[in-house]
Length: 474
Image (tube, rainbow, N blue to C red; front, side):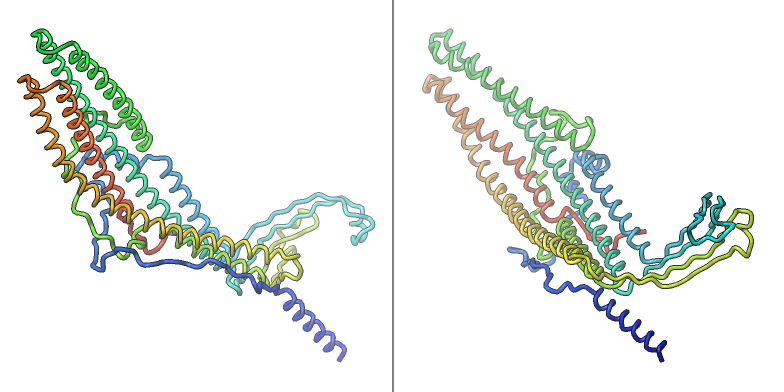
């Protein structure tokens, strides 16, 4: 009866410890909430996805080569790939924690045994060798899903890493294309500036002839001479801009093998690419940055689950088998064998609020991940809306500018003819020429903006990203 009573008391004590050990996380909850509104202005009709190699739509082999080189060699993209490999390795480590762990052990120790301890003579006070050769096994039984949650969090981070690599590819390709088209713009502006210089030199010859014939004064001659240094200064400024743009392009592709001004194709309306695609209703599903943000929410959710599981008992099954001797001569004898097996339970009883603090940290991380996603959604809407507006507006501006250029060139021809016939002043010619040059420069800028806006649209539509069905975690 006393033995039964003693066992009952032990069982009650164990149950009390179990209940005391399960600390409470009551009152700790995340505060943020997801916001995924519909895409404003989106069409309900199916929209074909952007090509994964969208830059080929511009039909420029040099651009194709530069983008491919950047995707292969750019250090920033290499950093994103390295982070992905790290996340995948963390997934492997989290997966390994779900299985039994086995270690080998070999201990050989020479020691003096205490005369005043547990060891009897003649061992007490002697110096002997001891040896242990055994295998140890440990398996944490995941009753409360702690290890599974850690694995799911690692998988979420790995999937976010894959989406980050895709997003980095889209950003890098678009930056290469935009810088390349900026270099094309500078080339075209240089062509306009050189035509301006040649035109003003011809005007100076005409003025000199008229001054020699007594038809003009030195005032017109000085006005014509002063226009030439101004044109040369514009050429020099554009050449500086061309060099800095080439340097930026070389940094993006991680190579000095980039084209120079004069080696680029001309700006044409056909280079702006195919017709404007409609804004898809599934815009968010096509963007890698949105996918990365969603996977980070999933990883943070699993981290919260893992933190909650820390409040419950940790149950391990441990075992060992091997050999142990006093003295090394009989270490490998069968009589030296030893083994043991048994469960081990660890449960939190008092931790001064450490587990609750850890859970609050994970909840805050989840809130941050949710708000980051909400911010990415807003930015996606902003980018897509701006990209569509830019493509449409630039097309309308180009149509109006083409008419303005034709009118300005007609007025300039009339001014030159009147000046040659003595019916107008040289100031009329300069004024008409200024309008023509301004329109030519504006035409170049608009053509470059049309290309840049198209690149921005491709980027805003996800750059051809296609979400993988699963992430390889080996």
